Image (tube, rainbow, N blue to C red; front, side, top):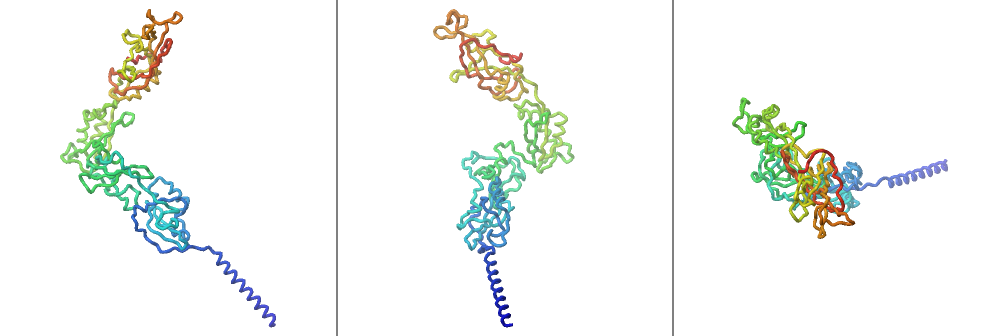
Length: 480
């Protein structure tokens, strides 16, 4: 009995010992977590704490090696934020914790506040490393040509207003609106004092200071201001006008500015100036939008405006401040231009190339055979054409080279007619030459009735032998 009891006790103690060892072994193999020290708020200059993700570490709710830390933004997401072209995806660092292993974790938030958490920042205090690095959210443009110039708001209103810093280049109040509505300051002169480019987007911003209202200042998108005072648009007092062709193409745009409101009965021009968006100003708009008003605006377009048409009258009379109205314009009559061809050697004055078909005292070198083309060079009367338009027309119609008449030379090398008695001969035959002129440029101008365009054929090459027969592509005589 005692022997049996002893045996049972030994077995029981052995089992207990084995269980204790097993428990110790299990505890030792469990995951070992770091502990984080106290949270410290970063107090250095906030603008020096703009950072960007490197994509090497994820963002967590706690320092990543502390028990209970959950992923806020995965490593893959942080990599996308690292390569983003949006300033909204920069981070601002504002707090820090250090683990018992010496790892530093920064508390960060994106500029748009979408992501917030802890990211590994290396093991060197006061230095951004690991999953983040210091970021320059803007790049100064100290040599920008606009610095020192005066501008005005292009389109006063609630869009493209002034900011304490370009949007999302600083956090929250660091990049907030200074002026939320620029309408009251339409027409004010603004001095550009600084220029910066948003590093990621590449968009240009100017720092402006209102010369009439000093409290109006800040950073504004460069395309929201203009040096052209005539382009200023005030939604409270103005109406935008598009001159539109019959095919729907916008030919030109302008503004009817500082309009007077309709009278109380809405039957004529009133006495009070419009001062709010949506004010009926049709009668004043009609009075100002005359044919004489439109003529200089449409100069060079080749289009004509008639204020008296039913559609234009209706559009004007229904106008309200802040509106954009369309006024119909029609294309002018076609004006055919002749083309004068010139040669200039870069030293002497240009020489007009003359037609070999007419009697001329011109040097034989400058007498050419002009081809006939399939089309005339023409456009709407009053419309402008470019130098490229002239050159493209001649090239398309295969008139990019011109050949002179055949000529010979005397013993001294002087140019003479091919049938001249003193023409040099070889083997009993007169040696003939011709010059090939190649088109080099056109000259810009305006289509006018019976007008003349100009083209230069400044590349000249003398060729031994007779000129090839001129190839006519049509029956239109263009050169004159």
